[in-house]
Image 1 (tube, rainbow, N blue to C red):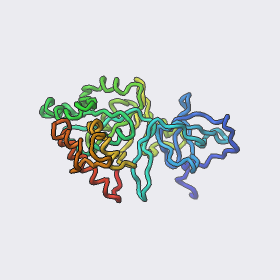
Image 2: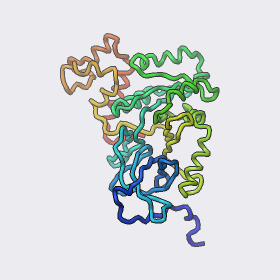
Image 3: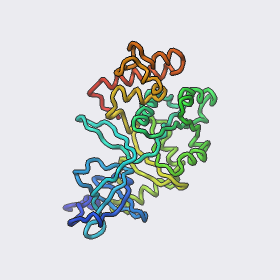
Image 4: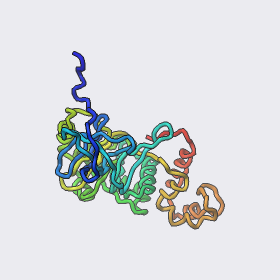
Length: 320
């Protein structure tokens, strides 16, 4: 049958001239196909297209939109000022916005697979650069051979002010405390594959699947619509952006000096280096290296900084 299988394809909404006074507020909660699922202040969900001139519109964006003539769809007319943004490098030298208006990022690790500390440092450096508070979740803590020893591996992070949450999504350990940390904030989980982000999300959002289907149904696109990221409202308050993938953001727009600032224990020493363009490698008069030699900076963190700095020097690198 002609046209079969295209029933759920989004149609371009018909909108006439738009008066600024007629625009409505909304929150982008998901990407659905070529459209956006926009939640209105009263909780309704509507499928919106977006003007090309607006560029990337991301999950978490607060927007102004205009309804179509039939009132069933809409068009995003303006993206309101963002309090924060996470960006990942894309191909052809372009960047893509991952999420907007995040209050914090929780970096998830576990005893199995073993923590990728370079990836952890990458996440934390990006958050520092983007001025987004970051915390660390040690998931599957019940699987650690020695819990005290496992948590001791995080002493370098605790010492420089990163909160650590030992939890087990499988056994429910620490979940109540984690919910309190998420309360009234817009947060996102990030971490390598296999650390249990999905299990954590399900523990925090027991009705996640129902909500996903609801978003698809109420936006008019039917069930099982693929989404890149989705914002969910937590039952006890706050929001959680669930984004699939191993590493959903990278070192976009970050230069060498930005990376050094992303290591927060470097910050107190950077201004005391002899040269303003000090790379903190083997530079003369480097206050960062001197602090490391005095035990004020963990050598392992400095070594990982050098590895990330080396990757920044590779122009063709596309970060996941």
